[in-house]
Length: 173
Ligand SMILES: O=P(O)(O)OC[C@H]1O[C@H](OP(=O)(O)OP(=O)(O)O)[C@H](O)[C@@H]1O
Ligand SMILES: Nc1nc2[nH]cnc2c(=O)[nH]1
Ligand SMILES: [Mg+2]
Image (cartoon, rainbow, N blue to C red; front, side, top):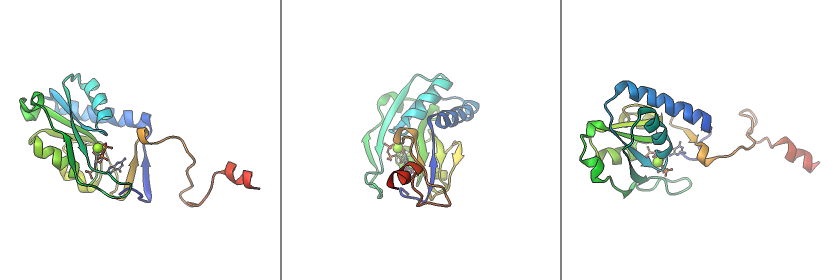
């Protein structure tokens, strides 16, 4: 849930490494001829996996699930899959998202493409039944911060969550 006490910040380097680790796992399964990226979060890992696996047929399914700061909205399919993907054997289609949390997005996507392989870089326990392949599990009460949503900033120590940056304190003296 957004606002969780535990955070899992991911830098571009770590994300690239983890997405490559996902590609290694998918390469050992093999047989994929097309990728479906679940927008928007799935776009970056889909690009990395497509490069590693040499896949050039890449589609999007545009899904939005979180619309408020703290609340989860309805799952909306903003753009469905096209015939390019639907005409293929679904077992050759690899669906990629950045993470599964409750699994609601994955379920909505799976409902439109049964038997496709669903892969994510990160997974929370509630969403695990919806994922075929993932790299790293984080606890349900952890919020993952992706590099495209963040920048460098002061982090309070775990043991002193109210601490302020040194520079700010000095200015006040
Ligand atoms: O398992 P769930 O509980 O459904 O949550 C996971 C989904 O939530 C996030 O997408 P979001 O809808 O926030 O949109 P975005 O990808 O455009 O950031 C994330 O990218 C997953 O797609
Ligand atoms: N960035 C981000 N988006 C999410 N959507 C659902 N869970 C998460 C999460 O942990 N991090
Ligand atoms: Mg998403």
